[in-house]
Length: 184
Image (cartoon, rainbow, N blue to C red; front, side, top):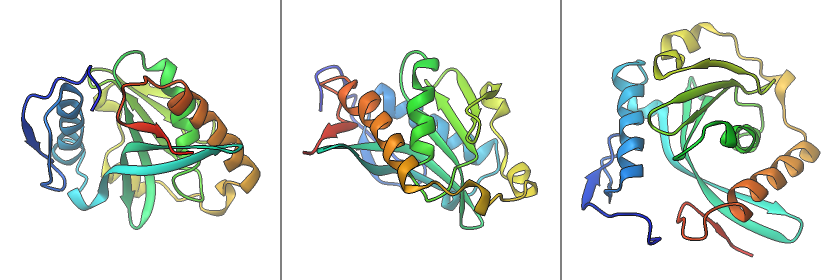
């Protein structure tokens, strides 16, 4: 664990009941998980925390953890990435992540610092809304038709998106951050 993470004890994961290190960042993640269930109507089984993603940029590889994937009817419909600080600086890497976690474009991309939230259209990358209250509810997402085949990510596109994630999250990440690391 990096020196800039103050460990406050232990905290139970709202989704999995797993015991985690209690940090300020983890408290925000738990707040987000609880909000998705209590306020937005998602089942705990819809929310998948701490998803590993391995990316390559040429011969260099790295691994990071994607905070939340949200699935409805066995389809990943939303990715949420938490990070302290500016939201705008996280747009491009989170859009790239949304094109790597599953073989198709995840339609809703959420970037948050725990206090503010921006929601992006996964396909266009455009900002569609801001604020926790604007995160789409489960009920709303069930009403939207799946655009399955039109948004398949090609291998070439995935390679380019992986390079973006590597540059922003691995090379550009804080050296004391334990949520991303070089593995080769």
